[in-house]
Image (tube, rainbow, N blue to C red; front, side):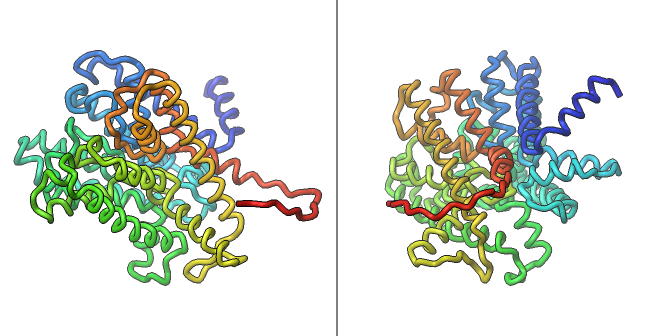
Length: 448
């Protein structure tokens, strides 16, 4: 072992785990960018900012694109993109632990601490079981998804091209990345029943969170045995999906650029279902997002900011955070001093964390919108939509990604990165606890 490696390892061990993980993600983004610059990755040379933006979008499983995946990438480039999506969605430490386990190597306490931070857990217990659940979920869902999607793509494109399209979309969907090997996304299969069932199923399962999946597999259908987190996530998801689907149908039913392109009512509802589910996390589209009404775009922004489940491949402030924030608001107006749900209390520390996460997320989005508005020409709603999509790691765009300057791309890259790994670094600061030495008398602050 060289002295340089020993010093680097010693310095790395002194860094807080969230900072180590953030550094690893940044390193992966730059490695991915260099891979896209290789001559076999693209049919023609691309700029470094193109490569960096694409790599960052893949690692953060966002899906915003400045180059056409279908025409501006070779098969090798698409494979590199798939690997980056898988690593970014699965989590670097989770992937590392899986490799160590497959090789029969021991997993030390340091690796477990990093894994705990990567999975946003508060305890080191049951991490091994959670990793095994993640491996089973990834292999099963992506494998079955690819087989089912092959039934659609193979007859149209031939065996090997069809198989590749199926594998790519299965990986992209389960990791909530939103990348597609087709320039127009999935608009060509807007009413295809297989695509409209398989793709949403993949990103719903990938987006509810590995902790929820583990809880469901462990306790099967026993609702009472589920943890409070699982109950809040499932309840919030069960409410948001129908609400988003029906809202999209009502707002876009007579829009000639979206739903009105279809004659049958069931076709419009099928498209509404797909867009209602994909907006919070996945980023796939079966309609022209640029043709949405402004009211629908504003609804999409709210859904993208909420995002999916915690410890999942989704972004946003997370469903559980949103639900706890609503419960805290209701409790305040009811003059309740204790917050509870499903027979379990929610501590003040958790409520404060929810408020901090929400406040910081809104400030980040506001700063992003301000920077792009001050440096770019464009419709305010388009810019806001782009920033919200980047923070929620969704990948939907109203066509504004191509208008970004190099500075604008850096802003979006930073927002995508913070939207994906921000809770890791933020959790470090939130977890820093200092016992006050002096207790001050309570004062009165006039609020509202």
